[in-house]
Image 1: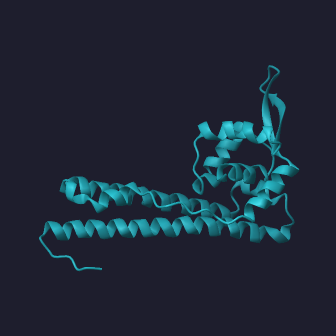
Image 2 (image 1 turned 180 degrees about the horizontal axis):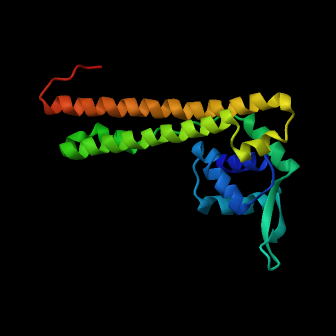
Image 3 (image 1 turned 180 degrees about the vertical axis):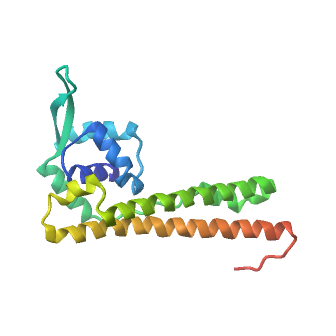
Length: 201
């Protein structure tokens, strides 16, 4: 279960409250594996029940209140190691935008164009966001990444950082390909509108 693995990778950097974990999830590993808070908190309870993590109360505020802080256990670290040794499961393609594109004959010209323009804008934002993540890693400006590096020998810091950048570069290349595809589609729609015949590819 990749959500579980993603949460454990975050906790391997150090203890987190549920709130901080969700916050760091959405600003780091969430770019690689999306999950809403409604999935994160129940999964934490399951992981605690299975002793992959442990939770303990820490002070919160000035009125004696507490909140739960979570830490990865030895069992959780072993889970991560086992997870990395398993083959990746590839799921069959499910792309709504390509399904729509395949049947643009049922769409008005404006609707088809808007579909591709929205796709283009979405991935332009992805490119911007991912460049931001990569820049943070290269500049060592992320407090969360600094916290992770502090748990490892300095000789390993460059390698650990490069792994993260490599993963984000994969998202970046996919996004750039989606932008090119949308641009090709918009050009195709314009050619069809002008009555031009399209070459087979």
